[in-house]
Structures are given as C-alpha cells and as structure tokens.
Amino acid sequence: MYIGGEEMDKRYRQYSIKELRARKDITQEELAKLTGLTARTIYVYEKDAANLRNASYSNIKKIADALDVEVEEIFLG
Image 1 (cartoon, rainbow, N blue to C red):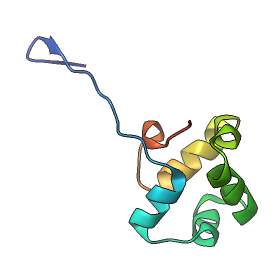
Image 2: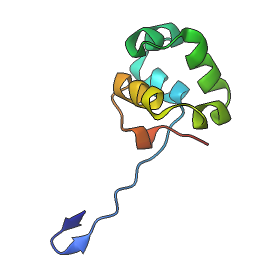
Image 3: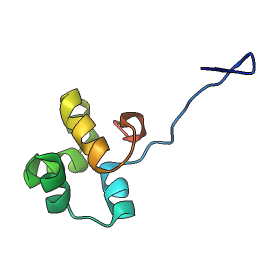
Image 4: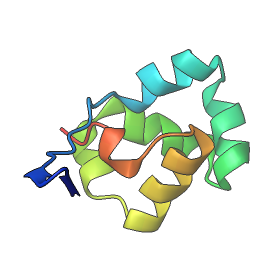
C-alpha cells in the first residue's frame, strides 16, 4: 500500500484465539455457534497452534469473522 509516495507496511499484532475470545467475552461454545464449527474444534485449535496451522483457510476465516478481526491477527504459531 502506498501513501503519499511511501510504501506503508501493514503488520498486525497476532493473538491466540483464546485471547481474542476473552476480548469479546465469549465462550468456546458461543464461538462455535457463531462460526458453525463444533466446540471441540475450537478447543483443539486453542490447545495447540499446530492444529490451527493445519486448519482450512475457510475455518480460520469463520473464526476471524466471528471475532471481528483480520485473519492475519490470529496467531498461527
């Protein structure tokens, strides 16, 4: 992205799903309902970032949308 002739580097601070959930004050079950995923899937993603890294982009996008963040803000480990 260029602003005033200078390139602007767009970097995001990354947060775990658990941190993002806490910011919205919602449970794993509530996040599951918002995303259409199971509470077990949310638990597995929160438990180990390796599971989240192996998740489909569409699942990560659903989580990001439900948490009102960009995909790039979700820490993938």
